Each structure stands twice: as C-alpha cells, then as structure tokens.
Length: 205
Image 1 (cartoon, one colour):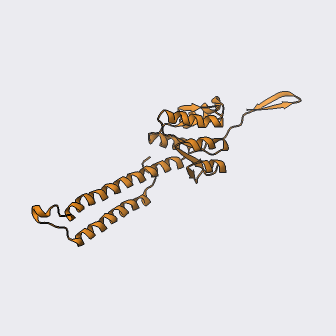
Image 2 (cartoon, one colour):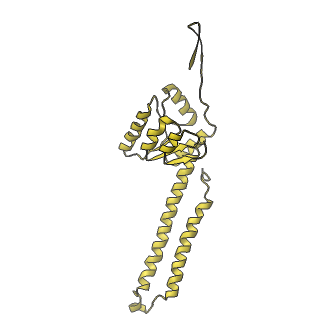
Image 3 (tube, one colour):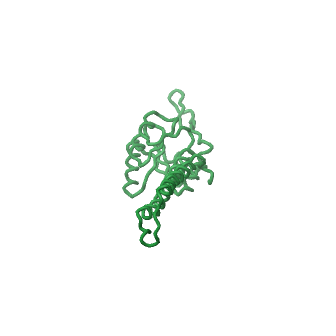
C-alpha cells in the first residue's frame, strides 16, 4: 500500500502488487507432482504472501523474512534432514541461494543471485525448475542403466575369458569375440546415453 497525502493529510491509499506470471501455478503443480514440498519464503508481509500463495497453490508460507533470515531458514530445514532447493532472483536471495543444497537463479534476475546459485535458468519462467529436476533425474537414471549394462557385460565376459568354463566344458572366449563384446558394450552405453537428447521435460505432466 502507498499512502497519498495532500498538505500533510492522508488523501488516499493506492494498492500496488507484482502480477503473478500466468504459468507459475502450473509450474508449482509440476514441482508438487515430483514429490517436492514447496515453501514460499519471502520478505513481503504475511497478508501479501498468503494471498500470493493461495493463488499459486502453495500451502507453506514463511513471510516477513530478512535476507540473512532466509539463509537461516534454509539451514534450519537442512538440520531437519531436508535437501533444500532455493529459487530466487534478487540480491536479498543471494545468501539463501548460496547455502541451499541447490540454488536456482532466475536468468532475468540480478548478477549477485546468478553468481550465488548453482543453476541459472535462462528463461524467466518457473517451469525451468521442474525441467532441470526432471532432466537431472533422467540423467542419473541413465547413468545407473549404463553402469548396470557395463557390469553385466564384464561379469559374464571376464570369467569366461579367464578360462573358468574351460575345465568344465572346454570353452574359451575367442579374442575376436571378446573384442566384439567390448565394442557392443560401448555401443550400448553410448546409445542409451544418446536417448537423453530426445527427452522432453514436462511430457508426462
């Protein structure tokens, strides 16, 4: 609220508010669908914060927070065993972005916020946050698949190449077959990793 005075006497009040981006509600729903707890941590007063939270579907609100208190709140959540991701774009968000497990800076924000964060989102949309999380989860899943595939190839191939089966059934692994199997192992890993190029975050939302 902005108070307007004429000759020292209050003549009126003007209400000013930042407009909520059209896609913010949908982005927060995506975060919640990923199993994340979303908290609105803001320096704004509680009435304003509650109104914004209601519009975008956030249940947990911590308002009237100073910049240093934001970092303290992050530390408090971490002390409870939570892994915390902080999204911010202002100078006052920098301490919290730096102390969070993962800091997401909005690319349209201040340079200080961008320098303090781990990830910079090139767009001004909150959809960049679930996009980054989904891509990271797919990447870790892909790595595990590749490790499993390489483990299977080596678990089957190395003992045979070492002659484990020779005393039993007289089988040795021909070096050409071993080389071919190694090439197939590499091809499998590279092909599986290449699938990430075609992954579209949000496709399952």
